[in-house]
Image (cartoon, rainbow, N blue to C red; front, side, top):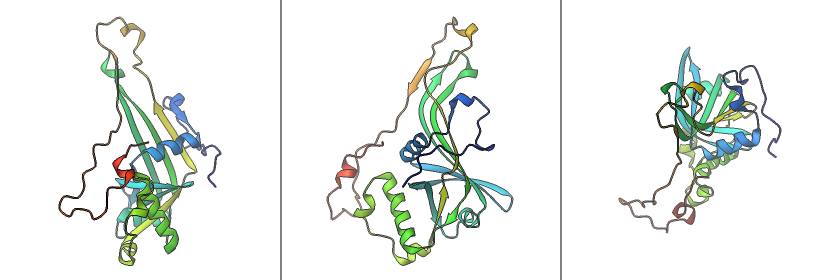
Length: 220
């Protein structure tokens, strides 16, 4: 069962800059995580900070991360090195009357903590299915599961969603009062991710019809 309580507010997740944009609502955080497609994963390896994009999934109250078993970042994460994961959705461009107040509308989640490696074979397979299904629900049941060689070559980490926060911006520009009469246009341009028509493999035509979930794909 998923935890429905608020996210843990700590000195590291307490928002100081424009705190009214922040939230510790777990349902809101999960909705953003479930809509996002990739995460930025940050960790220090031998004193050198790294941030890399990574496909992820959510398995209940845990974020699932994966990659090559030889990855320095994942090796460090498996050894309980502190990790930071952020997911950001860009919802619009905000144009103010001054360059200073130009901004973006966005929704973001930051999760901090120490990850653990998933080594149990059955749990590892479930976690990898979660990552596949994160993009298209049910897709893992329409594909070949990982074989033993692929499982060995893949490292899977789970990060508990405990110490985390949400930050977001909505609406139009917030100009200074003295700029409101200036003759410059101000407003915002909403943005959204739109899927184009699916394209079947041209080099090796599939032997199965296009699944309905792919044909009618839309982001949540």
